Amino acid sequence: MTTTAPLICMQDVDKFFGDFQALKKINLKIGKGERIVVCGPSGSGKSTMIRCLNRLEEHSSGHIFIDGSELTDKVKDIDAVRREVGMVFQSFNLFPHMTIAKNLMIAQQLVRKTPKAEAREIAIRYLERVKIPEQADKFPIQLSGGQQQRVAIARALCMQPEVMLFDEPTSALDPEMINEVLDVMIDLANDGMTMIVVTHEMGFARSVADRVIFMDEGEIVEEAPPASFFDNPVHERTKAFLSQILAH
Amino acid sequence: MSFDVGLIIESLPMMLSGIGITLKLLVVSAVLGLLLAIVLLLMRISGKWYLNWPAQAYIYVFRGTPILVQIFIVYYGFPQFEFIRDSILWPILREPTGCAIVALSLNTGAYVSEILRGGVKGVSKGLLEAGSALGMSARQKFIYITTPIAVRLALPAYSNDVVSLLKSTALASTITIADMTGIARTIVAETYAPYEIFISMAMIYIAFTWVLQRTFGVIERYLGRYTKREA
Image 1: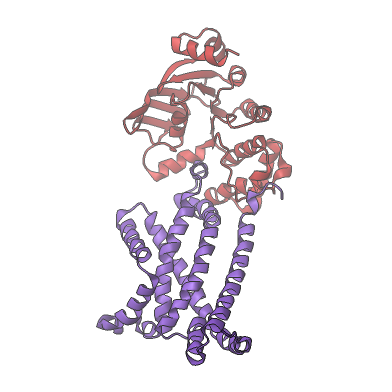
Image 2: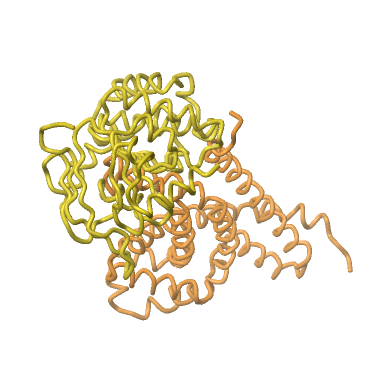
């Protein structure tokens, strides 16, 4: 754990969708360089929680601080936070009408005002990092799912974020493509990137996470380092969940 | 009944002389209608009731009434009002061609804005979220993500509307305009040979439609190039 102020701090965060309460009094601190895995049954609020961190969802009450500044309604605050936070989605969400290189360049050019040639250079560098520079001039549909997700990771990295959010990054992939994506994520973790990963890949959680967070019905039920989380879960709900996903 | 092939050959050049006016009605109305459609679309998706509401009312009225009635209202109705005769639009509305273009544009604009709205709604929410997560502004997302994809999605329905607009231009002949149909009607009145003349006129429209559809087909294939796996 770091001794400086946390990079991400959630205080008593509630989120309602109409009458349904998706998040209940979430309190969470994440230090720079920490790797957090969030797991839990579907509908437990784990995606909603990380989507609140870059304002894809607006929290109903409570406070969220990213790198010391509070996330509010102000467009300026939201833009500032989104510059710090990269996100990878379950369904990749690559822009289908742009080549791979353009997917990586567009936000650099529009948001960071990076000149085109430099943006392309950065794009190719990150494509090399996810090991597919040769696909730069193809369209997303011409790539496999695993390749597309690696491009999506590279696209987020091009913006040089402080934190990376992963919302079930391997759930939409065929089994044989999961590892190539996890390898890229492990590589990123080894480089010291702060990561919050919603996933059911328990092998990844065990080997990479500093902390595992278990959510159920909008609450953080249990929070522990992976060894104690998997071997000595405290709460009944955690035990029930683990026995279900680790049964086979 | 006799079928006079000679008459067809004789009158074809005359009818084709009206193709310029037909083309003018089509192109000018299509362009103005498209601009109007874009304005209506932006009003519809602005999220502001005072913009959305009038646009919706407009679309409702123009889709709910026959185009022929709209042409008559513009041509026979507007000159009744003094403020229109005094307005800067009068030089346009004084001419039948101007009236036809105004009516056709107003009509097609209502349809096309709904076609475009369908395209905009077809853009997956996830792509816009990805844009947001990358820090793109609402305006940047609209220009670089929504628009190119919506255009591709809307194009097949749009090309259909342009073909339909081509055939609506024939109604201009009802307000004295000598487009292809207007000329054909004049020839029929002189020769009493409706079959020959109207059938050959129909064939010109079919050829015209074929060209339009081929053109749109090329554009569709170009815009859809990223939807196919093989390069």
